[in-house]
Amino acid sequence: MAEWITETDGVRLDKYLSDVSGLSRTRIQQLAKDGLIMVNGKPAKASLKLEEGDLIETEIPEDEPVKFEPENIPLDILYEDSDIIVINKPKGMVVHPAPGNMTGTLVNALLYHCTDLSGINGVIRPGIVHRIDKDTTGCIVACKNDAAHTAIAKQLEDKTCHREYRAIVMGNIAHEEGLVDAPIGRDRKDRQKMTVTETNSREARTRFKVLERFRGATYCEFMLETGRTHQIRVHMKYIGHPVMGDEKYGKKCSLMDTQGQVLHAHRLTLVHPRTGEEMTFEAPLPEYFENLLTILRKGNG
Image 1 (cartoon, rainbow, N blue to C red):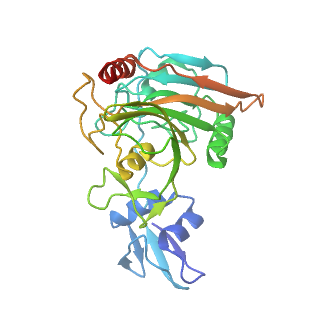
Image 2: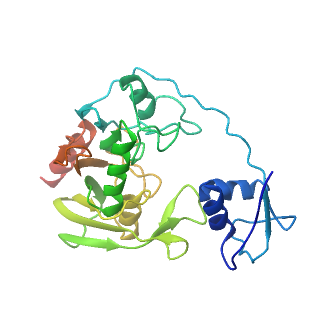
């Protein structure tokens, strides 16, 4: 049992405890949900505003060791050196293990392929500095050491690491290019989804440019100015043009045999963490995407 006596007023419990204990706020919020944090002898919510002199007591269970096995899964490697590896991720591959997807992930494949991966994100996400969704294809970078991880993470935070996507969306977008500037937060009715909301949200900006128009669909390029969960998918639904095949935010596409959204991480530009060289990587459009473009172009004829 660990305990602290607060020395300030008006600070949220999770923030205060994170500062004094070194635990993440997410971990503290889970401990509070599990009833393991007491303030003045009573179970407390993570959002509780503390008063000077409050007694905080908490039990911190030891983490059970988690070990994920390397798996000999073929990788489409766009670039690799001793610091980073850039992968063209296929459709249907989850980036890191999670309940329901403990094997067959990009992390399992990287553990087999690489002798070293950065440990900043812990044993569940070794080397992973950013993610793309299971059914989104294309460029993703992983880091082989903590120095590279820290450098790439800072570029993502400072928006000097550029990510460009391609997608086919439903309907015809009225403008040739534009900016969707709308905050994104967790959907209160469905915790598995994100939504545009002013409540408990973070700023989100997505630039788009129309590449080609079809009957009932538009082929677009997207540039992320922020990196929120499901950002392009949520913003496109918000403006009335959900990504084709996106059953979570739109509907299934009858023109495809594959499942999931028609969304591809086409280009990634970053500064190499060791050499300082600006590098750009491109992942060609996957076969399913090209096939859908062919079908839509025939429909225009």
